[in-house]
Image (cartoon, rainbow, N blue to C red; front, side, top):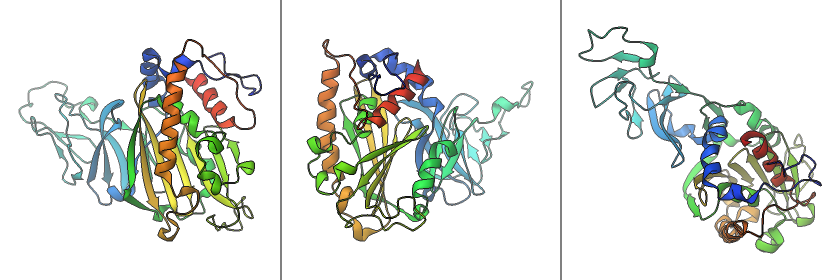
Amino acid sequence: MSSVKKNIKKSKTIPSNFYYCKTKFQKIKESLFTKYWQYICDTSQLKKHGDVMPYDFIEGFIEDPLILVNNHNNIQSISNVCTHRGNILVEKAGNIQNGIICRYHGRKFDTCGNFNFMPKCEEVENFPSKNDNLAHTPCEIWKQFIFTSINPKISLHELTKDMEKRVGWMPIEKFKFSKERSKTYTINANWALYCDNYLEGFHIPFVHKGLTQNLNYAEYDTEIFKYSNLQLGIGKGDGDCFDLPKNSQDYGKNIAAYYFWLFPNMMFNFYPWGLSINIVIPVSPEKTKVKFLSYVWDESKLNTGAGAELDKVEQEDEEIVEQVQRGVKSRFYDTGHFSPSMEKGVHHFHLLLSKFIN
């Protein structure tokens, strides 16, 4: 991806075939996604010792079967595949405080995934060995949110530290998940193209005319960090904005929204009413699922301000992104230049992509 330069004024976007090439799509599974963190769920789903929840690392994309388990208030991520013959061990959320028993041949594990017992194997040599235990994968928590990875290049702290500095004053651990306000969308476009669109506010006055009623476009800004970036949504007036504490670096500003992006595919959007987490899930080179997960802080501020019409904004984004997906496949398009002032976030994303998947 030599078209992407560190100097945004000299840089071009990634080559267009990244957005539809099947070979490149398969490559990023191992070269990119297994090396970074994924949001899985919140700690409210694993309150007691032995509480367990099965999951795939990235549903429909990287389908390694795993489980999250509360082991004496230490949440761990463990392989969900029996080390005997490969059966799936835990099929639904529940409690395994007495251990895991494979329903195929009766192999037993404790809540840490350590092998305990296997019938009719008294004569097996060099048994059990460490390979008979269930493998663990990295698992870390920020606030109430559980993240896992396969072989992470960075710590979760490195990924979230700038978000913590900016919005850590909020009582995020107390935000309540709202199932009725959460939704999954399917978009006929590449996952990275969806991220590109999210990472700039350049399109707001053209695509989201309703948002311009709440956001001061002239003061819209993007701040770049190492593995994340922040788009600051400045409100018009002080209505429907955060009541910022004096120790906030943004104190005195009319902040309507903090739009945080975490590499490679997570968005944490903070509004005065709470938080909308968007998880971008690759399905195929030209299809993507996006989970919108809502966590409510102040119900009285729902349906107001920049976070009021998320479904409408999403549908507007989907329409334009699907059009761009058609366009990037044209023989008459390959790369484009960035706006140095308005597309810093997209440029940052493309730099990271070019660094980690070349």
